[in-house]
Length: 207
Image (cartoon, rainbow, N blue to C red; front, side, top):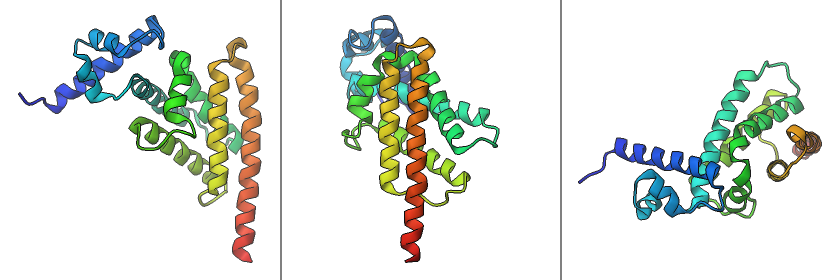
C-alpha cells in the first residue's frame, strides 16, 4: 500500500509533537526513540525513516523555533536600529523561541551545530546555519557594509553565536541577564572584526 505525501506529513507531525511532549515531561536524556515511537503510535523502525537519530529529531524542533524567531525579528524591526541592535534582536528573538528546548540545546549543538559537525548529516542543521548566516549578511549590507563579509569574519560570528547559545543554555542568572552581557560583548567583537575585514578587502582591491 502506497503512503501518500499527506500521510507522511501527518506521521512526521505526530513524531515531532510526541518528541516535544516527552522531552518536556521526561527530559531529553531520559527519552528514548522507542518512547517517542510508542507515543506517536508507530514502530521504532518507522521513526528512523523520518529522523536518523534522537538528536536530529531535536534539531528539527530547534530549527522550527529559530524559524519562528526570525519571523518575530522581522515583525519587531523598526528600520532605524544600529547594526549591533539588529544583531542582538535577531539572536534574542531566537533565544526566546528556544526557551522550551533549553534543556537539550547543548546536545543538538554537539551533534549538529558545532563547528566540528560535518555538513550533510542533518538537513535541518545545514539549513538553519545557512539561513542564519544569510540573514546576518543581509543585515550587514543594509547597514552600509555591502558585499559578503570575508569568510574568516563570518566564521568568527558563527563561533561567537554558538558560544552565546552554550552560555545561555546554562545561564542561571535571573531571566538569563548574563547571557545578554555575553551577547553584547560578542557582537561588539564581531562588528569590529567585520568593519576591519571590509576595510582590508577594500585596500587590497585598490592596491
